[in-house]
Image (cartoon, rainbow, N blue to C red; front, side, top):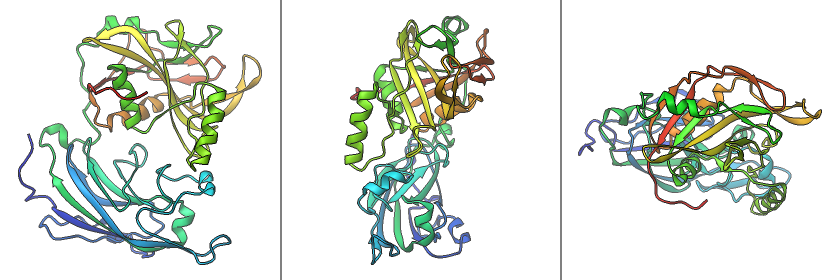
Length: 388
């Protein structure tokens, strides 16, 4: 049920991002609850502005922006560069920088809901209507490097209007989505049927199955796409083609393929990655997904092995070079948990401990990993079909 008034909440706030002021404390003011506009200033060296807007689930706002920012003169731009909230058109040199929104203009106004670690940044530009998928704090920022921010001048004026105050249920004000709670349909019998580990093509046991998703194939694809995960390329040939096209379109290439592993005697159905531009070859959050032969409440159970690539190491099978994963693999399980649940597409979640829990082992390439043995279970909301 939705409330019909915003008496106790802000109706309108004006948030002004000043790129040269040295006063950080001004950005921590609370928005007015009387309906009067509020103004904030943020120095260029601050990566994100905390608006102090704590949005409820389904709260809808309209963001509009104006003003200009200027980058100083350099060897290529003798008069500097001045631009508005849509930012500068991306160039080939932008491919070697890490911007929060990879396909948005350089210097564009952006926003995110929730923490810097898990919140998915999105383009605002000169205007955007946004509905909060879950409760969380709203942040505003600029799609630029810290080097840019240290020398930029100017400001964006940002107006935020509340169009709908959102839901009033208890979970609607709980940041990050539904809390952990027992899921009766996830039984010990089902958990016994799920293999604890995947294997390489030679049958060597490898990564741990540390996440279960319950939903249709469309549900699975949609939740990852919404959370900003990308489907990885399936072959080296595809990699070359996609890298060329992404470069021609001045986009960051993030879909580098991953090796083939096996579960239920077949290779993964999907591979997804969250990667950092530039560092994608050595550092990325990634996972493999298999559809299991089991169902819960008439919907398929999907098994996931999620790990975090943090560098390279020797492959003990052949003395070659392979990716090194973070041995504390529960961190990657929780990264997936936070990013997927933040989409609002998760209806229930819980951590369960199988009777034959895996707490320590080696990957197929010889690297060690350790875990508390728990498996994350996410029940996905039903969705309409999406393109693969």
